Structure formats: C-alpha cells, structure tokens
Image (cartoon, rainbow, N blue to C red; front, top):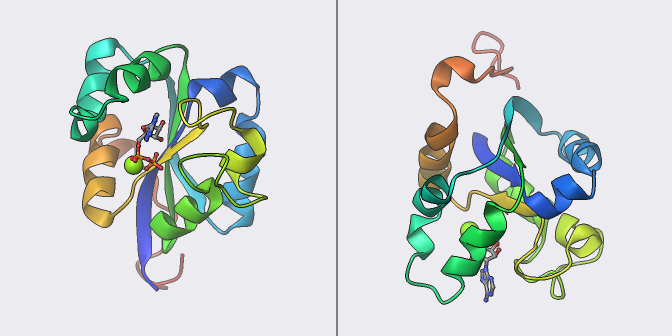
Length: 149
Ligand code: ADP
Ligand code: MG
C-alpha cells in the first residue's frame, strides 16, 4: 500500500445533475482526501491538450465536445492507493458494464457522458495534476513527521 495522489474530474453531465457533493462523499467515505479543487469550463484547446493521448481514437472529437459542454469540477485526491481506489469507485468506462454501486453505474447515461475521469497510473497522475494545479495550490494533509495520512 502506498500513499498516492490522483486527478479526478467530475464531468459536465454530473455537474449539470447537481451531484458534486454526492460524489465527494463517496471519495471521503473511501478514505480519500480532497487536497485541491477548482471548477473550470475548459476551452477546446485545453481539452484537446488534456486528452492528447486519445487523439487518434474514433471517439476523440465527441469526447472533447462533451468535455467543453459545461463546467467541470477538478480535484486532487490523496490517500493509500488513491489511483486504484478512485478507479474502483468510478467503475468501468462503459456505465452499462460498471458494477452496481459505482459512480458510473449510478449516475452515467452513456459511455460518452460517463460522469467522471480518473488518472490510471502514477506517471499519468503526476502529469494530469500538474496540468491543472501548481504544487503551491495543493494542500496535502499527510504528515511527514507522523508518517500517517
Ligand atoms: P477511462 O475514462 O475509463 O479511463 P479511457 O481513458 O479509455 O477511459 O477513455 C477516456 C474517455 O473517452 C472515457 O471516459 C469516455 O468518456 C471516452 N471513451 C472511451 N472509450 C469510448 C468509446 N468506445 N466510445 C465513446 N467514448 C469513449
Ligand atoms: Mg483514462
């Protein structure tokens, strides 16, 4: 088990549905701490940059159009195994395949409007966090002296 950080984004469908707080509760109940957060309405150019790894996928244009359709809520989560824990809370990419009780199973309409983004590995988490938050705007609640989160 490792203390980690991950980038989490509540997508425009969930912001429109007014369920930011319900989703935040799931993070907290799973032992994850919100150590930075901001609401953003992405520009086309920034959404393209953020999702550059998918630029050759057939769904890329739709994904960008959806991600700029309204404001999103972006947060950095901290905790033991934060990346895997957050991905487990999210559920499968396709909400029809997501386990019951996961965020995507409970809130998502489709694979396009699938409510939440989460980093998939430590390297991508570091890149994605730095894309939105300078270190000075991240408020870790991990104590170096006690070593406990
Ligand atoms: P995840 O968000 O679960 O990490 P990916 O990184 O594979 O999934 O894809 C990024 C996003 O692109 C997904 O969350 C989804 O919104 C969209 N996407 C992925 N696969 C498809 C697909 N087959 N059809 C439409 N949209 C897709
Ligand atoms: Mg992904």
